[in-house]
Length: 181
Image (cartoon, rainbow, N blue to C red):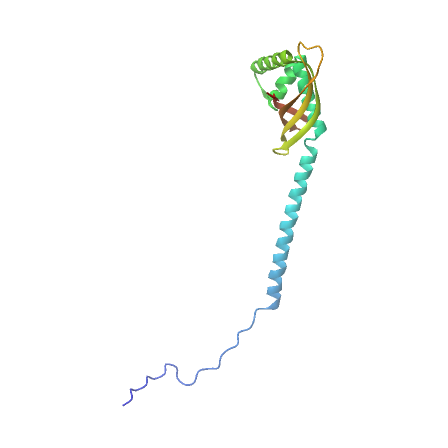
């Protein structure tokens, strides 16, 4: 014999399937519009950042301002101008220093060493500027110099200077003469 069938759990026939309404078109359109708006906002912010960086770097250091700053620093070394040397070497901190004696002594030593090397120098070109930030740069430059004790004959030397743009001032924070062997 056949086993008996279990009684259905739902009495009678099942109701017909129900069609669920689709998503409202306005909601889908709103999400697409919101996504496009977000992309436009991100692109605008990116453009503003790029323009601001270009503006900062163009206002910052130029070949002419670097050449002028380095020449003023080298002139200060040649003339023994301790305050200018110390102001540059302190890299923007000079006005806030309470005791400047060590800075002035170091400036005097730097000037004395420079004058023992050269009787005159002239920055002839800025060879390369490497921008570290909108206010800081490393500069490779060429200078024409007359060695001390030599009456005639100029020599060309390259040097590297670390520069800081602070407002309208460009400071030579450090200077290193590159010597060929």
